Length: 387
Image (tube, rainbow, N blue to C red; front, side):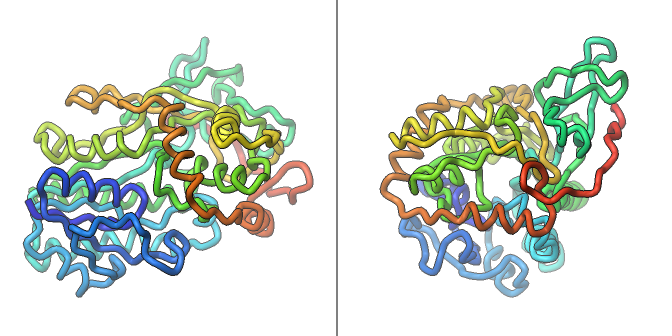
């Protein structure tokens, strides 16, 4: 088949391109080669058997050329960075929402309709994960209040009885409550694709990626995934910047398993017009990730949480992957093995540690509070409605 991958020069997209070519498909890539991600020169890992169009997904003429004769579209293109999105609002909305709108508009109005559309969504659209209260049952709390966080009471309380609540896996049915501009834009990408796909009978699948890590992550980009951010700091002999107490947890999935999920839903019609979590189902604390990376890089750095907290940060979120498992998905990469592969690749890479300057930028905008950081205006801790 002839397949278009938007954002196909990026971290996830390039791995997907390799896998598609290995299966015998003809692959075209549309990518802007964003300097914040790629630097000033194209990455050396680009597959020479793919066709590359260097253009922004908002460029209608380029999108028209890219879509010509394509059977399948993987829409991976997006500006990525939760913190940065909170002060570069126009950039993120334009790249992610307008870019998706242009892609869909060309598909519809230029009669360049693929046989299938697969869009990369994000776990960030859930906001805080779901919880179970011993008294109230399932609850869906919103963000913790600044007053709570200022007291270093990090864990989530039940929004109804205010007793401690226990995190549980996040299913696709959980009410969406994005807490950053990036998250809002990813929700919009997903909903635009699914809405247009249903209306024009284009089978469409949204994959909600959890925390992806692996080789080719941009180590010098301080707004990328936490594994790459920690790698840049550790490689430069600096302690990783860990917010809160480091016990907040996420679901870390290797990029090869993300590729596996994409190939699966492309081939299986049971996935059509559905949304799927793509994770491992196993939460891991941020502090443990930092310690594992320091151990694997064999760098003696202290992992000391800052007890600062950022606007919009959630406490716990791990995937319920029952839905995608039902069509044959099974994550294959064990966390420590996957991190070892990241470190083997990372030791050969130049990584500029720009994390401190990015953190200072967040503080300058008042998006970080806590010890030695400016306070923010308190926000209420209200509950999201239960479904």
